[in-house]
Length: 421
Image 1 (cartoon, rainbow, N blue to C red):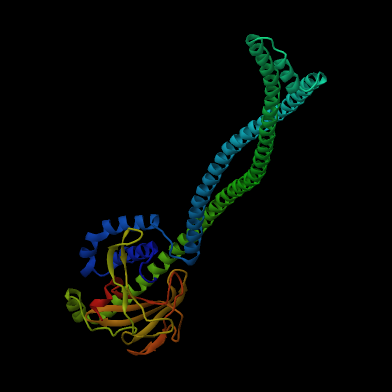
Image 2: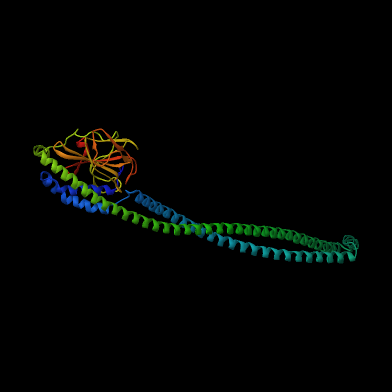
């Protein structure tokens, strides 16, 4: 039906071929009866294992898978955005606390500066008064020297020298205190400057962080919107996939009816031919594989063989009732043997189909079915010769690329084409 790996629809269609084949000649009835229960179980499971074989369902499934993947990414992005916002909020609280502390430090520094100016002015006033008092009575140094000259004894001289030192020392101390207050005032002015700079820096950082917060909150909102949008998209994609699946099931049911008609027609034609050649029919019923009875239907390589197998992707067990040949779009399809075209129609699953009845070959009623062709240049009722070009390889129906799905029917039952090529 399509190039390997093929979808579960093939399992169902192939299982139907085997089920219908239970009505073939008595020569094969016992052999097929042994497989009946197993095939019926496979047929039941085939409907449940329906997968992306039609283009519509493949697209719907791809859309759903993309939505699910994008939703997972969006959820991760949302979680990341929320985490960033939470971290930023914590940082914002820290920065606000730091700004408040810096502003408080500035208030305290300004208060200390103001007090320092008051203290300095008071000290200046004190020094001014002291100096005025001292010099109102003359030069302190001269007065002290004069008192020393007037001393009558050594003891008095010593006492007057001490008084002089006290007077001069007091003046020096007051000047020192003034100097200290001025130095302290400069320190406090520097502290105020630093505190103002710190507040300015904190406010600038807070403003910058506010911009970051706004960006992160916008990112978080965008992530939320994306998640909501993708949830809706996933819901719609699921609905689309269900709709496509339902349509595929309808096509498969139609295919079942078509397959029954073809198998019944081929079975009757084979039985009629066998009755006309009873001797050959009896020998053919017991014969084994007949390699070389049919010519190759196309110049191409096998991409998927006949037989039961586990699908490598979907893991179901089913029958691939033909052989897929590659070769490329437009490759000529050739009649595998001479015969008559008994059916030609379009199937939603197999695309363009052509059925050729080859009559009795190797004691069996053989027919070949060509699927997925781009077109055929023969029609129902036409006789074809072995090797005649009957159509061209295509990708119609449930197919992912140009190929030929080639089926061989023996007495109405699908068999391995490679045993006859």
